[in-house]
Picture (tube, one colour):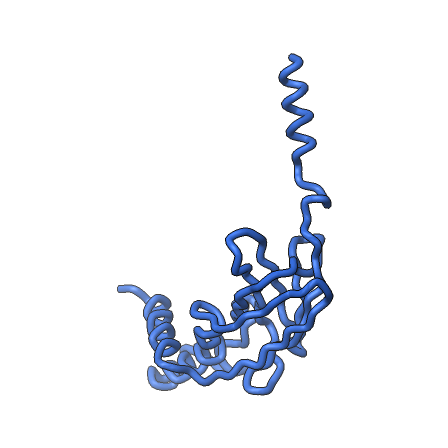
Length: 171
């Protein structure tokens, strides 16, 4: 019985509380795509160090974000991060222009709209899967703005072709 009580005390004492949190720094910024605010994008700061937690935020209509470390804690721990930015499918632009009946489209019109949608929906890979973005969070609050371009290179084109193939209806 005494061992059970000791085990319970050790478990309760070891449970994560506010003291387990690193010192967090407020981090915010703005994301633009081709000079325009990018709404509905997830901005993820992934630590370069083997330890540490990621922080992320979602851009609003003005392209602004604030990082969240955990459900109740804003900010990020000081350190060096890789930054990945992706469009959130739940907040994505409409696939077809308002008033468009997809079933009434020719195959050519449908393919063009699909390609246009993919270009709007998926950011170039250098901002996510093959990120070249980085940020350092110092000990005081920080603003990190990201000016993205929709220009794609060969790696982006290859990834987009694989995405389209994965989304294509299977026979």
